[in-house]
Length: 195
Image (tube, rainbow, N blue to C red):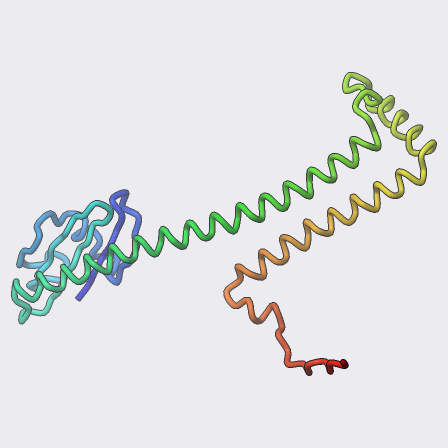
């Protein structure tokens, strides 16, 4: 029994149908029909069911399957097709939520970096219409007159940059195929408690 479950926009959700038979799946419009397959030159029973979200195509070359049995297969496949769509939506939503958390955290760290730069070099001291040389001269004068403040700000910027790198590393680790390999959970002794 072959199945070919697609969304109404023709995105394949699940299929075990060989690619050479996809044209047959696309041209089928009947719920159930028995006919000669022009590709394999064998008798087949196939049909398509349309629902609100999926297009389900079933095909079998088994001549012993009756209309009643084929209809039961279609009903079962339609049920699981709808479940697959729901599962796909849940996975997509979870991925979107994970990415939005990552984007939020990176945006926050980036805002911290921009704020540090703006505190070091106020916008009024750096005229965007000035030439690059004039802007560099203004930056050099600020750095030379406030060395300790610049050093502290650069240190905070460096830490924020490291937090962004760590955020991306954790995201990559948690979304990898096998996160437990990356986490390297090793057995360890429980520390003694002293009262």
